[in-house]
Amino acid sequence: MSALEKEMLPAGSVVKAGGQTVLLTGFQNTEKDGTVIAGYFCVPWPYGYLGEESLYFIRRNDISEVISRGYCDERGKEFWGYVTKYADGIEAMEPGQALLLEQILKEIREKAEEDGGKKQ
Image (cartoon, rainbow, N blue to C red):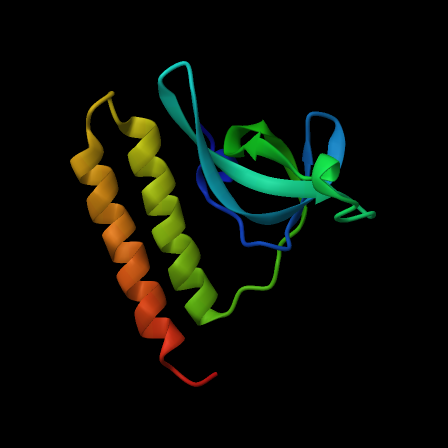
């Protein structure tokens, strides 16, 4: 997996995936055939959200090109670093390795709670 495929991009990034240009709206994981896959919810660019049928999931390794990265300050970089760690963890798991996943999720939640209490 290349560095482009490995790094989780911030929401608001515009990328090419499967021949389409899409806007990443957030991180998500899904399970397919017993394997957990890390990816993003996205909408078609430049149209954006046009209803539920326009919101879909892509895997992070479906991204062939980053056209524009979403805004990311230091707090965002730290958050997306946690998300990348989470995504790496779930993709490396064998079935039944929920302990690692739960630890990473706990770290993400704790960091989000800490950040939520700080003034912008």
